[in-house]
Image (cartoon, rainbow, N blue to C red; front, top):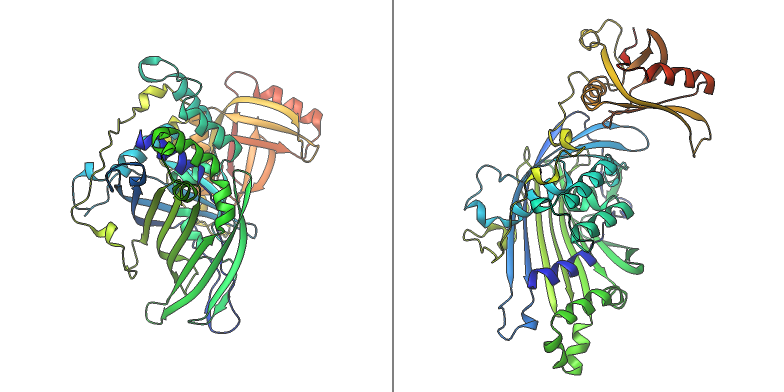
Amino acid sequence: MTSLYWKSFASACLCVTLSHPAWSAGGIEIPGYAPATGVERSYRVLKATETDMSFWFDKPGASAMTAHGAFRQRMTVLSRDEDGMRVRWSLSADLPEGIAGLADSYQMNLLYRNSLIAYGTAVLELETDLNGNPRNVSGVDQIVAHMRAMAANGPGGVPAAPQNGLYEIINSIEANPLQIVAALVPEAQLLATGQSYRDETMDVGPASATSRDEDYDGVSVPVTSTWTLESTDATARTATLSLSEEADAAAFSQSQQPAIANLMSGFAERAKGLTSDQLASVKRASKNRSVELVVSLNDGSTLEASEIVTVKAGGTRLRTYTHIQREDMPASLPLPAVLTAKDLQTPDLHIEPLSSAKAGSGSLDELSTPPAPPTASQDTTVAAGNDGTKAIAPVALEVKSAEVSLSPVSYDHGLNIVLIPESAAKFRDFTQGVLGRQTQMLINDKVVMESWMREPIMDGRIVLAGTDRKDLETLAEQLRVPGAKILVRLRP
């Protein structure tokens, strides 16, 4: 029961809005974030959560609980232009090499493995702004379809009840797809906290305060952020920054009242005996966040981050710890003791592993295997006759459907082509290998489209526009013939 009510409370506190520093004039110059494209970066991640609900129990500390996690996640910037970036995260619930202790001691890994199975993928393709903040997720429809399939094919083939928590997650994702990022790769948001798309300067020592509003279930909560440049390292070419954030107590307390009411209903008998002072304390809530960041003075990227978030509400306290370190760089930040404990406390929780077979043959099965890395240079220009160009062979793709429809944005007609899964995978690999190059699409040996490949196409969908509707209908008829194929190749 403790876990159930805490889960409800914690989910109500979720917020994915992040801030960026407002540097002062003069001082140390921190370059704009300019990551290399096509280069995979590996990050070691340590996590811990401390949950204390002892207020609701007779014995102090009886319900205090600490859970640990250790991960190794990989990130590649696939493409970058003046509007943003395309980023791929390859996700794993496996313990990294060199982690001490039994796997059962890292129960966050067991929970995360179930999350990857429930969402149906171990790879996320994100569109981000130039700071690295996620703003869109590819394949949301497939993820939702996979989760609905899991709900419909529950244990023993019995569909989940309408009030099942899985449906709440699905509804939340449909309302805000970035919930997928918060659930599967929050590291992307933490790394982006210290990155800015433009060159900035800051003095060592003085603090700089900014403010913003965050939305918590319709309640606007002011948040004050205080940035400080703590130090620089000329040899390592790094700057160490600190961030302290505090949510407005009154507004945050207001936002948490529904969750607090649910919590109190779970301890109704105990709540009846609360004094007026205790009741007032229970209804208060607070949230603060402290972050330390090591940023590269070469390309503005976050190399290391340590974050502690504390939420108090309803007589409970949840504190989360996260440490991220890029594996090719040495660690420099001190770690909280909870992350370095040799004897890990194992929460008294039973975590039943999910089986991917419970979902049946979902449409996201092929996305559970990370895409192949690019096979050629991702430079934006390639000289004619370059050997890398010759190495990319034409690819024949089989069409699943082809329909002409009117765009609700441009009010132009377009031919929407959907490839069969096998061809979608081939097209994905082809587009990854020809980034920055001009390609051609041929239907019945006729070139129908020439385009520069600015980003990989992961979902097997192609839209052909800018052509007369009658011509589009003719092409659609040709592609509806059983076994119809299109050919994609580099422009000769």
